Image 1: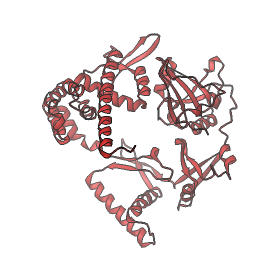
Image 2 (image 1 turned 120 degrees about the horizontal axis):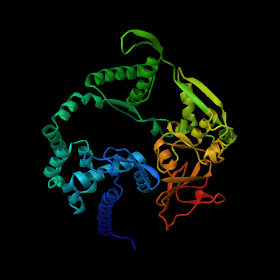
Image 3 (image 1 turned 90 degrees about the vertical axis):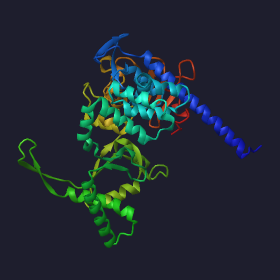
Image 4 (image 1 turned 120 degrees about the vertical axis):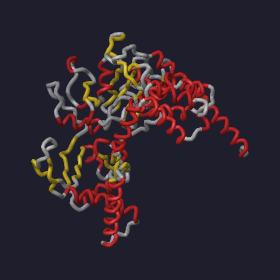
Length: 450
């Protein structure tokens, strides 16, 4: 029987209330988790706990507890977050739990939404204990009805009143917020990326004039794209024009020009894999490639357009066989093996980690001193933090097959990690299972059969 609109709205209202209760419970559980995983080490030095080396790290403001580095990694995976995302989220909860008690109690009582409290905590983490107490005392009872402009003003007042040196530093360092970020990791299948920037006003006016002028030149030269597209193209034209210049480089100490730095043309590097060669002519794969070590799909038509761009230099790398597992005798890893692993595993292969493989250590899954070969099938990219956690046995993993890994934490959390991301296998005693080597691990939800 079809439900009426009124019944659907009643159900949705129930869903909202259920979600809010769940968020408060998670908030409360995280505060309890922090209390159970405090490292009593004010200096932040390493301590020995249960035969492994752990470190207390600060993730909230002064006066909040230091939490176990390795335990935080396990918690982040349980929350299905990367290390950085987990540290940021849990840090804000701990900030509320220890330094903003009035706001914390309002959250637990259901008077303030969790998201609103965490947004305030994000602002107070850099404040002194006195300034944070001032914000909590003056904002806790009024937060449900406050605007963010009012919150920002109160935080600024707390800084000026209790930490004038910091207020002066903020005034002097305001320009440091300037940035120009090209989000290359977010490149889409269509071959486009987002850019964000914060500029000095004078610089912004100059850039606006240059972009507008170049976009108009494109129109006059016959380009029929809309204005927004031509403005985007203009940024590339300006960049390529700059790369063609011979630019003087001054010694930062003396100011003398010591050399001339000539820019290079746009370089398109194509890695050809044996798998790709075997797929030529296949309707399933022939139109899709992979974008660098991010391993993200990219339409080959977009690659052809890049190659046809004026001034592009195309460099085709030798064929790389991702299934080549020829070992070498030494512990040192040859460049060809590193390149193979980086192309196979785009990121750190720990649960939910997004650190690029090219910035990772290559770990011998079976230690070299225990007979593990130095070959791609036994090499796994791990960021330094996950590498340390694995070295000290807080995490263990097994290679199901090259590119697919079974991870288990010290407290029994288990995950399957591969090209399709991280798939939690459940808590100890629940749905946890070890995917055997003869079993297809891609049968799990979220890991479609390849």
